[in-house]
Length: 171
Length: 299
Image (cartoon, rainbow over all chains, first blue to last red):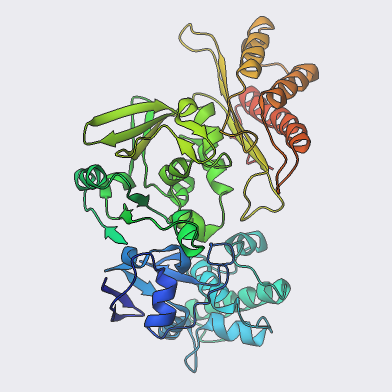
């Protein structure tokens, strides 16, 4: 089947897609967007988190046909949202904070965590409470178990994004 | 593989009549796992995401008609007041990403004994609405499940909605698992207190999850508690519940379970845990009844 959707703001088409194929497979193997990671293929790990019509979902659990005509934003598309949030050099502040806080170890879980953290921070004014961060990231597994640095990164990104929202420029 | 994408409920029902073997897919949180792991190769997928009729809920005459495609995230955000027990169960499902996609109808369709919604639907006396080209029927939730991942649903039927009475009194839900997120229940328990109203006696609703081939009611426990509350006049006095009542209630709930040993836990552990969950949820629900306080979250 032919699958046409909007990915990171641009129309994307894949042909000869098998009907049982996941959105994740289409993104990675047919649309050259390997940012979303393929790990568990059962929604356990969150490494393939993307926004589907602006809602975070596991791309491995969306059938390709279900995404037809929908808007998908992957980790590759977050930088485009960065200007409004005070990002620099093509990185979203959430991505920059992960680097600055040392929250990237092997890096495999990072794209999913970045998308999920981005979703939390755009919905939350100020710096979210720790329980709210933990709840938002509960479906994203880091097998390096670097969770403390990841929490640091989310707090750092929140602080910087809040400063921009308050009109103080990028921190 | 064929991929059908009906745009209305009428189209969906017609498609299911024409392709009775088609596997309905909504959030994909069960179906896609099976396909990804090559555990299932349906000849036809029936995507229900574009059927707007399934995606909303309505309240009418004290009954919530919950469309089969309403997500757990929506249940939590919108129905915590009318259906607190279901909202509590929905909060324990998977992760935010899973709750954004997974649906109550899909939970029923998968008919796993461990489905988090099932105990609540049993406790609340909900009815499952199933539709086919031949018409629509209501199936009591307690009669819906026939075995692990099996239900009374006919091949040409689609689950269209669940009809759930708005909570007539305090509801509780509790679940055992190794962490708070991404957990298939080791066991779960749901409780509903229905205080006396309009001259009818008070009654109790229960639901046991993940401790039997199907979700189960604990009818003896329900009758014991309702009888004890009535005899002792506790509905009227709203006094503290005697410890031995809660204890006995827990024992009867554990006795109603039909658990097995499996990778998530032993039968003995499940029985023991269920007696604890039953006592705890009763204590929480009764405290809510006594004080009129808002329902407390499980945990």
